[in-house]
Amino acid sequence: MLQICPFLPVPVHVLVPRKSKSPIPDAVAHASHFAFKEKPFLRIADGVFVACPELCFVQLACDLPFHELIKVGSALCGTFVIDSSCSNGLAKRAPITTTRRIEAFIRRNPGIRGAKAARRAVKCLAENAASPPEAFLWTVMSLAQRYGGYGIPGLELNRRIAPSKKAQRLARRKTLVPDIVHASSRLSLEYDSNSEHLTPDQISRDASKRLALEADGFKVITVTLKQLSNSDEMRGVAEQSCKRMGRRFQIQSKNFRVQHRLLYACGWSLRAYRCDGFSEDGAERKA
Image (cartoon, rainbow, N blue to C red; front, side, top):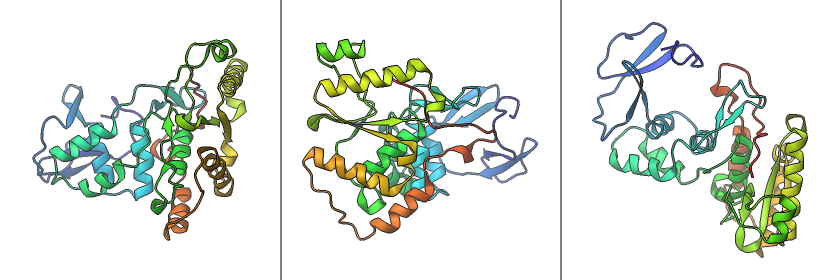
């Protein structure tokens, strides 16, 4: 197993149909008698199967706190993968699951342990985030106030839009992908990763994208990693966003303060899920 997946921390946890000693060295066996529907396991090598992403999410729901589960689920639904061989610790990929697929898996396996917590959390996942900080930015802005977010509706992650001819000339491309957009109010939130991870070409592309968006009447709010890490700074970003959208900024949930602290205590880092060191501030750039 460790030869196939060397990044797994030891001991490896394996699922078996009945209580017994671990069938492989350096592993802990967990017995499950649940009659899974359809195909919950994926074959990755001869005699080696892993839980599908949807089952992984439900299994994690058994043990993880709510905000941590949202963070991990958003990573499963994101367009990035942790890769320590990359300079910023991330590589691009297509999402390996979606909220719809997770919800469908839970419906097909309603009695599975973890289903209730997974069903609650799946509605809060960020989809199509290009990095962990970008997913956290969307979560802080969009998560319901009773869970500690600002509850701003209608924010979309990495939605491709068609700019005007003028904007196309400025951006030198035919389409643009704002990090987070509220299309009807022409609001764009752009995550600005640590500059030391960016090449001059990436910096230039980011700048031209912002100019193009502004040329088409978008209000562009840039959020740095330092701002994202500061809850007071992010309140200001939420206030600016609501003003642009013509919404009144108001905290209405009595649970907001406690849940907001829990959300920020969870943070955006996925470092704990790797046994090797990596940076993950998200220098992957989009068109």
